Length: 115
Image (cartoon, rainbow, N blue to C red; front, side, top):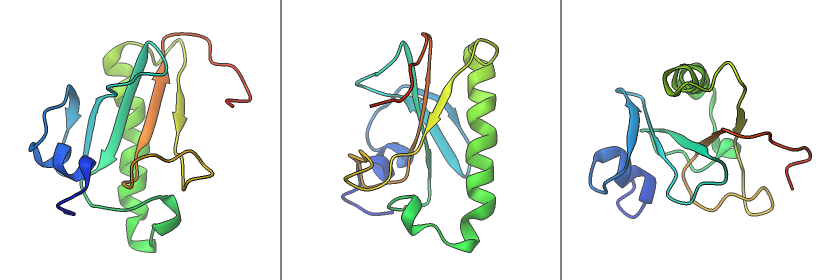
């Protein structure tokens, strides 16, 4: 864990969040500044800066993250109507927190391109 990392501290329970799912590998919680009616962040407990820093050893973790995005969508009741998964990477990619995180967005029609 990176002591200064916001998401590492949320995963560790040091900072409160509205968790919707948690296991030994990932944590899912509601975004405090939602971009859609349903906006949930899924993060690995392992500190990984971004997709650009993934290693071969992270393959199972990323599969776990994606499968649980579907499971959270089902749990929260928007899997059938549709949702978007977004992984921003780096400054130009719109990443604002230095910890890999998946945005799960739903609850309204989502236009394309995203911006």
